[in-house]
Image (cartoon, rainbow, N blue to C red; front, side):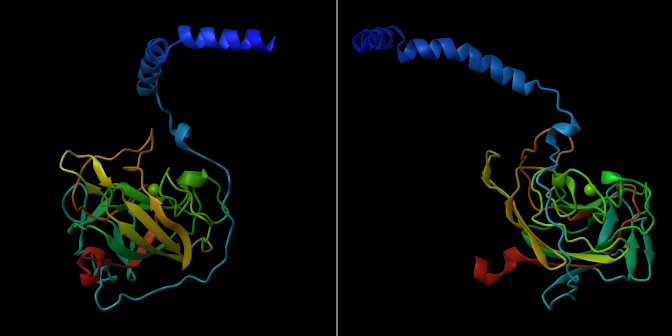
Amino acid sequence: METEKKKMRLVMSKVITPELLLLILLPLIIVQTACSQSREWTPEDTEFYEPVPPIIESSPVFQEPPSDAMVLFDGEGFSAWESVRGGDVEWELKDGTMTVKPGAGNIVTKENFGSVQLYLEWKSPEVIDGDGQGRGNSGVFLQRRYEVQVLDMYENETYTNGMAASIYKQHVPYANVASPRGEWNSYNIIFEAPEFRENGSVEKPAYVTVFWNGVLVQHKAEVQGSTEYIGPPSYTMHGEDGIELQDHSDRVSFRNIWLRKLDESPVRQ
Ligand code: MG
C-alpha cells in the first residue's frame, strides 16, 4: 500500500511540474488581483472595534514652550495660521483659546515642516450634540496628511482605530486617557516625516509617537500613508508641509500650540 502511494506521488510530481503549476495558478492570481483593485470600499471596511484600549486616569501634563520652540498659538491671534481655503482664519478667538467655527473650514500653518515635536492642548465642547465620531471631532494633520484624531472620548464609543489619539484608521492608541468632557487634554506628538526616493517610492515611512495627558499611547507607530476615510491608505510623494487642524463641525478648542523642528538638531545629522 505504502509503495502504491509512493508510486502515485512520483507520477504526480512528474506530471505536475512547477511550470505547469504556474500556468494553472497565474490566471487565478490575475483575476484575484483585478477583483481586489476594483473593490468598492465602504467606510466600515476600515473600522475596527476590538480590542478596546483601557481607560487610564491621568492628571494632564501641561507644558509651556521650551526656549527653542516655535510658538504656533499663544492665545494672542492667528498670525501663524491661515484658512485652507486661503485668507484669514475665521475660527473663534476668546480668552486665549481658539475654537472651531463649524463651516469655516480647516486651518493650516503658514510655514511648512518636516520632522517635529508638536505640543498642543485641546478641549471637547461641554454640550453634547452627537455620538461616536460626531462628538467633539477634530484632528491634527501632520504634513496635512496624517491625522492624529481629536475626539470626545469621555463616555463615548466609536471604532477604536478612530478614537482620540488614534492614527486615524491605522493605529489604535494603547489607552484612553481622556480628560472629563469640557476639561483640557494635552498631546505631545513626535512626528518623523516620511522620506521618498526620486521615483516617488517610499524610502522611509512616517512614524508617530503620542503622549496623551502625559501617557504614552502611540510609540513610533508606522504610518501606512495618507489618512483615508474610505479605503486603505497609501503614500504619494511630498515634501515639507503644514500642520493642519480640522473643522469637523464640532466646537473643539485649542490652546498653547508649539513645536520643535527635529531635523535642525545638530546631534541628529
Ligand atoms: Mg478628526
